[in-house]
Image (cartoon, rainbow, N blue to C red):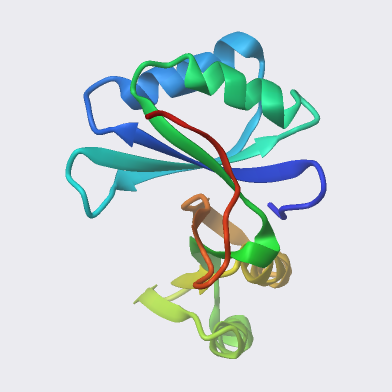
Length: 173
């Protein structure tokens, strides 16, 4: 899930009210816009939540997505976060087949990537890794050499780097 040229990260500040996320997701579904990643959580101000959306701009131009989002009543502000101007993170958790003969290799990969082993059984390991999306992509590729039983990624979260101006695409008020 890399943030290549066809993907853009937008951060939408919304009022923290019931149904807002459903309306945002519904807008994307109705318009046929593709969401690559979606993460939502409250902010330090209890009145607002931040939705981080990685969008596929091949499914719709970014300005069209922004215009449609601003038609939603609870949207307060929208900003685009370019990878060079943002700190981006994701979480990956995976369960991997790891019998005795390959367990040390899997543990070594986890150590190299500074991941964690969360659970161990006789023939499986559950591991986690957090970091830049590209780091998780690389980790996932290497785990693919072993039998992945289950894998889940959290979706990207992002904030502007300190001292960087982030272009506000639109703001209310």
